[in-house]
Image (tube, rainbow, N blue to C red):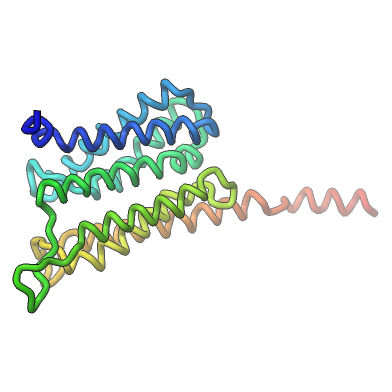
Length: 234
C-alpha cells in the first residue's frame, strides 16, 4: 500500500488539487453558467491538460520525460479560450475563473517536486550542503497569489486581468529565483527559464495593456452620440 502511494504520489496530489478546483469552479463558475457536473469534468480535464502541457514543454526544451511548469503557463490559456469559444461564454470571465485552478495545479506540481527530491536549489556558499529553499519559496508565492487573486475573481475592475497578473508574478519570481536553482546555463549565467520568464512578463503586461485599451474604448462615448445630444439640447 505504502509503495503504491509513493509511486503514484503525483496523481494523488493532483487528485486532491482537482477536488479543490472542482469546488472552486462550481462556486465561481456560476458567473459563466457552469453546472456542478461540468465543473468536475472541466477540473479533471484541466489537471490532465496541465500535466501534458508540462511534459510537452519539457520535451521542447530538450528534456524528454521531464516536466516544465511553463508549459501550463503558456498553453493552458488556449484551453480556457477553447472552452469559452465552444460553450459561447465570455473569454475574459472564463480565464478569470480558471486562474485559481491553474495556481492550485502548479502548487500541487511543485509540492510533488519536494516529495520527489527534484528541482533543487543550489548549495548556499559557506554551508555544508545546505541549499536555497527555492521550491518552498515558490509554494509561498502560489499561496500569496491565491489569497490576492481569489478576492479579485468576478469583480468588473479586474475582469480579464487575473491570468496576466499571474503570468507577470510567476515570470518575475522565476527570473530572480532561477539564479538560485540548479539548471543548465544557455548563455553565461542565464538559464533557458530566464528567457521564458521574460516572455511571460511581456505577454502578461501586453495583455493588461490591451485589456485596459479595450475597456477605455468601450467606455468612451461615441462622437456621433455626443453631437446628437448637443443638438437635442439646443
